[in-house]
Image (spheres, rainbow, N blue to C red):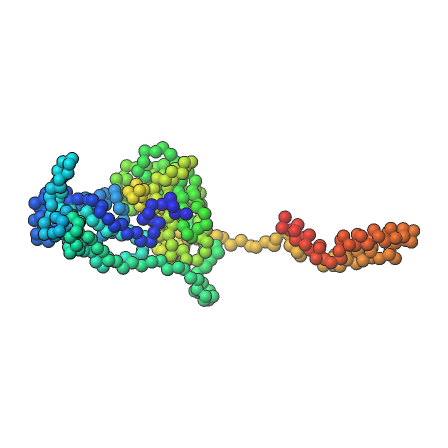
Length: 377
C-alpha cells in the first residue's frame, strides 16, 4: 500500500549509515588547527551535509547528534595520529581535507520519541583510512490499539458516524508542469485510497486563512493549487474511534491528474487533530526523492454525520401474513383430499390434486424460502 512512498515514510524509524562522502569546505591548515584544540563544533559550519540539509536538498528531517570527535577520514593506515592530505592516483593526485565522511542519521515519524545516547569515533581500529563511527539510541514504537472493554458510555470513544473531513486544502509544488493535481490519501486507518477531484482553481498565493505558516524552501514564487470541501472525499476510518485514529497518520500524495505521476508526498499526524470536533489548521512539507519539493496546507476536523430516522425495510419476512399462510395450507389439504372432487373425475382428479400438493408443500418453509430469496433480490 505504501510502496510508492520514499523509504523515510515507510518505517517508524529509519537509520542511514555509511560513508556518505560529504567533506569540509575549509582549508587544510584551519581544519588541523581546530582539531588540535578540539573545536569540532566550529568545523560543522563548513560541513557539506549540514549545509545541504539546511537547504532541504538531502536527508530532509533526518536527525544527527552533535559531533564531538575528530573527522573520521582520511587517516594514515596503521595510525590515528596523522591525516593524509594527498591521495596519489594514476589519474592525478587528490587533496583530501580531513572530513566527516562517515555518518549515522536517523529519521523517525512524527511524535515517535527517539534519543541518541551516544555518538563517537573508535580510534583503536587502525586497519582502514576511515575510523569507525558508532551511535547508540533509545527509540519508541507505536503500540497496537486495543479497544477498551469498559462499556461505560463516558469512556466509550467509538462513534459509527465519525468521519475525517477536509474543508480546504492548498498546495505549492516546485514544478513547471501545467497539469492539474489531485490529492491521494493513504493510511492504515482507511480502506482503499481515497482521491480528490482535480484542483478546480490555481491561486497566486495562499488564502488569508492559511497564510499564517511561514513559507520556506524557495516556495514563495510557486502557484497554489486549491481544493474545497466539495472536491475532497470524506475519509471513513475502519474503526471510528478517537483513540484508534489518534494513534496513526494520514500519508498524502499530490499526483498529476490522469498520469498519476507523483509530485510530492508528506505525512499528517492525527494525534492532535482528534481531541475535539473543531476545525484545525495543518501544514505538511512535501518531499520527493528525499528532497523538499513543496508544501501542503489545509484544515481538518473529525465530524459526525447527521442522524436520520430509521425506516423499516421494504421487504421482510413480516410480509407473509400468518393467517394467509394457514388458509393456504388448509386449501392445499382440501384439494389433496379425494372427497373434494366428484366421482366423475375419479382417480385422475385425485392424482392431479396429489401431485399439486407434493409440488407446493404445505410446509411453509418453502414459502418462506421463496419469499426470502425475493426479498434479497
